Image (cartoon, rainbow, N blue to C red; front, side):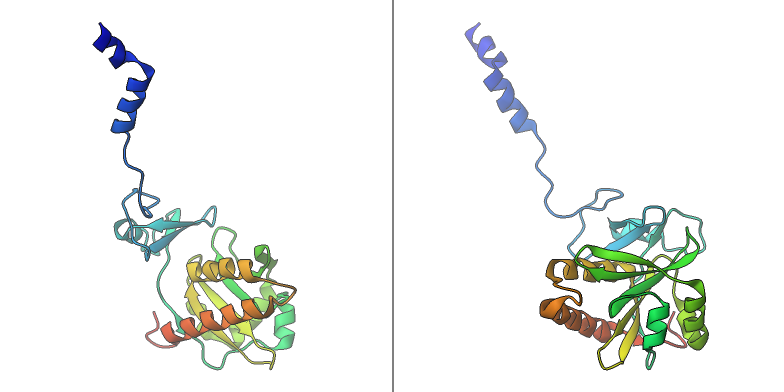
Length: 216
């Protein structure tokens, strides 16, 4: 009787539950199948919500077919550099981008180009006039290689009037925006944000190859 009472006591029940409780998950997991994934892993974009999802390699490969009608798209790992392509002051104003850095991509759900620029609140969307974008592409038709939803044109304009244009995975853009959000000071970001931009663009330049034939 005493043993049975002890077994049924709240303390004994709590101890039994504690012993049988699964161990907490350590590290990141695939957001689709819950398999463990490493710190360096691929991403998938939800076309409806624009959310980035961490994925294992198996789940990632399910969404690499660009011709399939799917709700998700795998983010490729392509980095390209458009040599000599810059956006002058007039074109920059027409694109309605108030700071010297932006990333542009085609949203297939809305069927239009959208532009985002960084700031203290994170990524801010600027509605991109279609005629302004068409003028940029007409002058540089090589930009047509951009894949909707999963790749972006990362454009930077420097104070001397120069700049750079890279095609990068969309997750790289959000990574940069998240980093700048914690550092941003004032209108132009401040010295720490500018240093972070320099470091990021140096890494992008190292990973990029020239755009052109064979850049797929």
